[in-house]
Image (tube, rainbow, N blue to C red):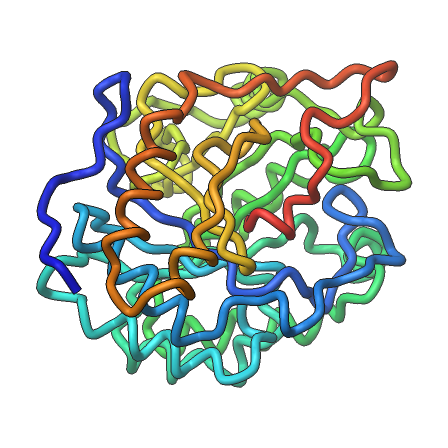
Length: 334
């Protein structure tokens, strides 16, 4: 491989230091805001091999990426996923600052110790309710007790846990204060996320959408929130909660997108590079990966793509409009 040392800088002067890699579009849940219940997933032949994902992540690390997040679908349902985790983790302590993943927690009881042993320090767990019956409705297929066992296993393994909660109108909005107390009582950060118009689902997102400005205003009637400069490398903006001593993050793609400081790109499990979560422009990295054992063509393709990274997304939630992008979040990676 030719040595490439030039960092990835887009036309707006933003350094690309964070890569999110989807290792599979499959998931063992069917969350109502994320995907349809009757999903058609990709065939195995369409996916990058784990070896190709390792090569691709190494190429991005050579260009200045300092943080890699493995996503899905549910990344821990990918066969032999620990081979990839251990392969990518060899860069930790050298050119890579952090390797982490986002999970629904269903497989954590099985993998928590191995993840910690491979050098993963913290993880994000998606959890939208503490009500087992509501959890089943939201996830369609999920087992709340199994997820709780997974979170407990991750905690015992020493992994730092951040809970990600999508705020949903008329669903979990009355639970957010309880989720905050539960998370902070266990030493977990909590990040709230606005639902995003990605992919066709059975529900109407105008019914689901809950602006976090409203959520924060409600929380401030019960808690003292003070904005802090803490950053975890992603789009969340954090506040310290005086009453609990914990951190509360807000990801607001609809009401305040923070695109001006975007340092992220995403690669799907098929090798498609998306420069923006909310735009359809993309670049095929699978072809240059398979065209040559040299990475020269791969780097040239990445360069051309980063030069097209847009200033921001076009997310709008409107009852009359189709989703902003047709692909589901599970395709791009959570």
